[in-house]
Image (cartoon, rainbow, N blue to C red; front, side, top):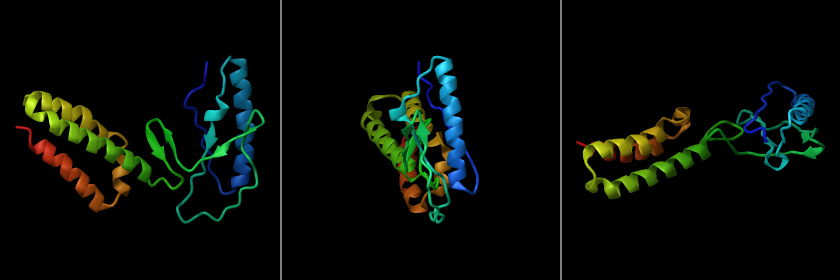
Length: 162
């Protein structure tokens, strides 16, 4: 059995002290997993350091370990469906959402003349509105021009429903 989607969060000013604390906690977590018959998938485990976009002048001297295996530092990762980056700009997540929306809109446009308005509304709610609503915080940090173009496509689709 695996322990899925576990995340540890630490905050502070000294990155190396935080890594030492994290290593202690990971050691304890590993012991707990062993005791409870859970496996940690080392190859799927990694870490990210969140920071302000302009605050990159920190020196990392410590390494992060689980079971004496060094973890890889990543600069993007998907957690519970949201793609995160160190500065929390959500650019990668926004790109993924844009691709999903464009794909959904194109598919619905292709079939809309073959379905009634009730089915069309259901499809729009399922494949467009649900994507827009999920992780709504990404919209606040995006360029207005990009947002306007994307939402214009959504509005055109919605306006075509009686």
